[in-house]
Image 1: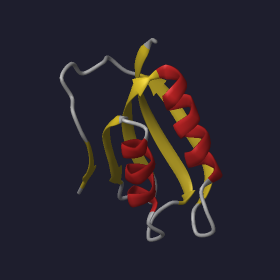
Image 2 (image 1 turned 45 degrees about the vertical axis):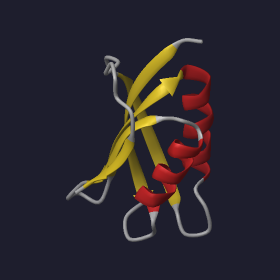
Image 3 (image 1 turned 120 degrees about the vertical axis):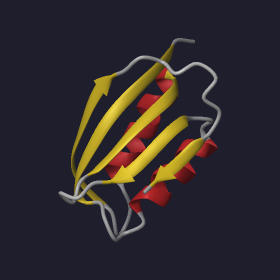
Image 4 (image 1 turned 180 degrees about the vertical axis):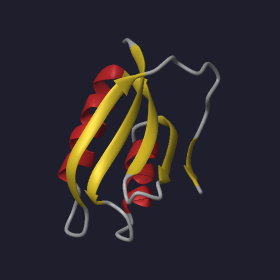
Length: 92
């Protein structure tokens, strides 16, 4: 399986609704590493690293959101893999 790392920016109703915890929970369930962080402009940025097919499934989950979370857009850029990264964290 091919490893990948994505840098993503989510817009919409993504702050104050548990979005970071939502992303972290689903990432950890799928053995995805990286981080997620709220931005001052109301968007949320994240880097996700794992098997490419797993990342694509995680992005689908993020786009769907839940009752509280409404992702209007999710931009995705490829990034360099970070060797030996072992966890997913919420950054402040």
